[in-house]
Each structure stands twice: as structure tokens, then as C-alpha cells.
Image (cartoon, rainbow, N blue to C red):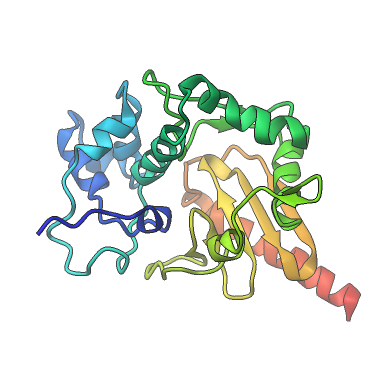
Length: 248
């Protein structure tokens, strides 16, 4: 029986795409050496070299070795975000309109003048990576989400989607301080975050009316060296505690 990932299972990284293992096997260098600083770097290096990243990912087999069914097993993968990008772009009849959509519908109305979203040679936005912005514009996007993803008083998302996307949909079951919603990292206290490589982040806490945006240049992509990711989490928590102290 052929079982295919759904949009929701891709959005919460439970689509069982074995990208890290399969990509690493296709590389010409030693995975153990590369992974000393980022254990999924081989995946992204291989993926980023493809002219059509979504087509490459779509051609990968589902993980038949993983016992849980789709939607039950968390496995973060850049490739799932690429597939989601291809899906929303394919909903447009005009490919050029799809390319303009992020700027026209989001960046320009929010005043995100520094935001750059790159695509592959096939015209698909990477989705998982390759978005650049200064910290002020990350903060503008965070405030937009905190305000309910509304422009001119109207929500730009379907009813209930934002609340579903930003609450835990699946447990990460590993040494993480965050679980996962739909393309957002989540916590049980209602806060959630977007994390990029080397320390970029948007942390949002609706209960405290709080948005924190960071740009950084960590020594490694995930902040494992020198515990930089742990320090960032402590920074978020210190600000939350400070707000609580003022309100108390």
C-alpha cells in the first residue's frame, strides 16, 4: 500500500522523509566529519546543489524502516519545507504571480524592506532556508504574527490556522526545549518560535505580549558549540521572568 505524506504531516515534520540518511549516502565526503558541527548539514548541502530541490525531494522514498505511521514520528527535515513551498506556489495559475506573492502580500505591507527570499533554479522558494532580513524586519514579522496575522484589520490566514500552527502538534522526543507545531517550534506555556541557522530567531509569547528577534553568527549552525543555543533559551526565559516580575 502506498501512503503519501499530507500537507499537515509535512508541516509538522512527521512525513517520514529519510532525507538526512539518504542525502548523506549520496555525498562524496565523510558524513561523520561534516556532522561534527551540524548533524543535518549533509542533507542541506546536497539539497542546495539541486536545480529543482522540490523535485529532488519528491523523488526520495518514504522511510519504510520507521515503525510509526505518518503523523506519529517527528524528524526535522529541510526537504519537507521545500515541498510545502512548491505546493503553495503551484496553487497559482501564473508562476510569476507566485514569485511576487511574498513581497506583494507580506513584505511590502509590513514594511519589511530588507527581506529577501531566495529560490532555486526551478523557481521554487527554498522554504526552509535562504530568507535574509535585518533584526527589525524579523521583529515586524513577529509582531504581525503576535497580532493574529492581520493586515488592515483582516486575517490573511484561514480561521484557526494560526492557533493550530503555533501550538504543539507533535513531540520532538529528543533533547529539545521546544516541540513542534506547523513549521513553528512550540512550548507548553503558549510561546513559540522560528529558528534559523547560526542563531537567527523570532520568539513570540502571546501571554506576555512579547516578541524577541535575534540575528547572530554562532560558531556552528545549531549552536551546539559553546552551548549557544542553550544560552539563547536562557535569554528568552530571563526576559519572560523580568516581565513577570514587573507585572507581579
